[in-house]
Image 1 (cartoon, one colour):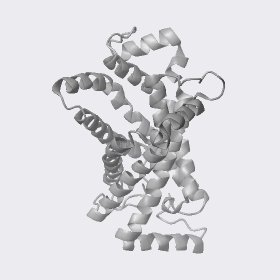
Image 2 (cartoon, one colour; image 1 turned 30 degrees about the vertical axis):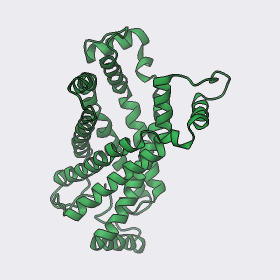
Image 3 (cartoon, helix red, strand yellow; image 1 turned 90 degrees about the vertical axis):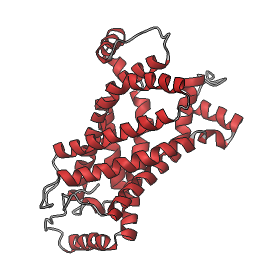
Image 4 (cartoon, one colour; image 1 turned 135 degrees about the vertical axis):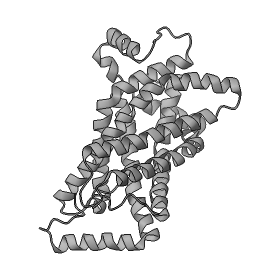
Amino acid sequence: MTGGGEASHKRSPRELVCRAGAGASAGAIAATFMCPLDVIKTRLQVLGLPPNSGQGGSIIISSAQHIARTEGIKGFYRGLSPTIMALLPNWAVFFTVYDQLKGVLSNENGDSQLSVGANMVAAAGAGSCHIHCNKSFVGCENETPDARNEARSGLYSGILPSLAGISHVAIQFPAYEKIKCYMAKKGNTTADNLSPGDFAIASSVSKVLASVLTYPHEVVRSRLQEQGHLRNSGTHYAGVVDCIKKVFQKEGFRGFYRGCATNLMRTTPSAVITFTSYEMIHEFLERILLPDKSHSHAQTKSDDHAKPQQESKGKC
């Protein structure tokens, strides 16, 4: 994810390997770091509160202590292997497609940054591929025809709001790019030469912004998918519009933001790890597989220090 314009939408096989490898590696790293929190969240959803959780203290801490006491460290990483198997192709496809679409949508001369609208289109296109890969992977896990059909009814009952969830990445990625460019201008450098701390700040701010703006659709999606699995649930929704009406009538506007703070506590660190890891690994892979391009970046960085007042084409 470069800050400047793309010189050409044609990518060499090595450039594609850099993007895909960095995306897959970043997804695996984030999944490994966040797995304990995901395990705790899943246990609370499926099994409820752990024993003695009502004696004060945080529910998360109580759940962590219960898992550590009964299962040991391995308990925090149950299910990590299938998660990584899903995330490796998902993030590899996402970042590769995003970069390809950015190249296609960029100006032919390559010396101007993509507009917000073009970045949104690129992110939405990559997000569509990401959702399709995720749906396909989960569907393939069901081996019998009956189980597969039952899973489809649950998974695809929320397919419309899931597609609407593309708006999340359509907000997050342009915001991420703009924040990187702002920080690059402020530091008188290029977006490619930002520090890991800068990438972490840009990714966290963009994630929070996108999450707050699109969280209501997450609530609707969850309600519809839950209904697909729990056929005897008390409340039935005829569709997206009906779900929105009933949530608003029963819980008001706050109903669309229940659990938002908890969700941000889990997803924001994951976004920081994913994006920062991606940028660092991509830079590392470029140095190995694309030494000429890496040398060009290094030369640009030295030119920035030599001419601090000059506006270069590679800058945002």
